Image (cartoon, rainbow, N blue to C red; front, side, top):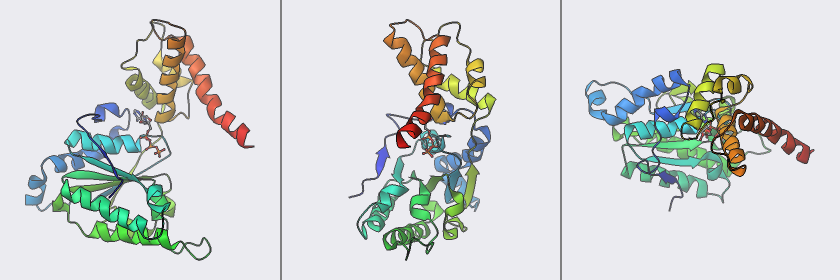
Length: 269
Ligand code: ATP
């Protein structure tokens, strides 16, 4: 049986409103949402819809969130599996998991199939590692077979994310496979403000909190860092039994999030 995670979108529905900034990226994905909602309209026009959408960009910029939001907007199931989950397996198991994932998807179409860390399974074949990795290559071959084995009119859209598009096997990027690629950018100042707004939406903020100032102090922070920052600030306020989260909490939280990765390097070195 496949271990693919099915996220029940009626319980934890993510929509484009949860994805801050990334306006261009969302706009490009609108077409996929509309197709999943009204496949007939597109098929009648003979329009060719992308079969696979590859999202690429730095870690923590919202690629998984975007893919879930496409499913949420379209109101279809979301099946997700991580590329690394396919390959840390005994010989043959990865390939059979890929098969199971697509079997489930076909039974539940229209739906989204999402593969995170596509590079873990999708690295160029025969790219060394002293003799290659047969298990991984078998898994990748199975993925290519599955991608070719369904037509767009089956209502399955494959999405995947990677931070390393440069190492992907070119076979994955051919027409009829991941034929649409969308760069997911790290947020700029305006993007960071939007992300902070989303992650403080359900939190009680003191009147001195200025999200623009926090955004200015956090260049280089990704969406994941900012989500973490907002949560740390809330934890600090709760620990002090405050009624609201103050600017001082946010400033302390910023320092903590910045120190986080540094602490890790210290432990490693
Ligand atoms: P990775 O490559 O590490 O898997 P990713 O690009 O898939 O990262 P996500 O898993 O989507 O990143 O992001 C992690 C979390 O960071 C999200 O669940 C969300 O809370 C927050 N986040 C990231 N980007 C955004 C965004 N643009 N708007 C709102 N929240 C965001």
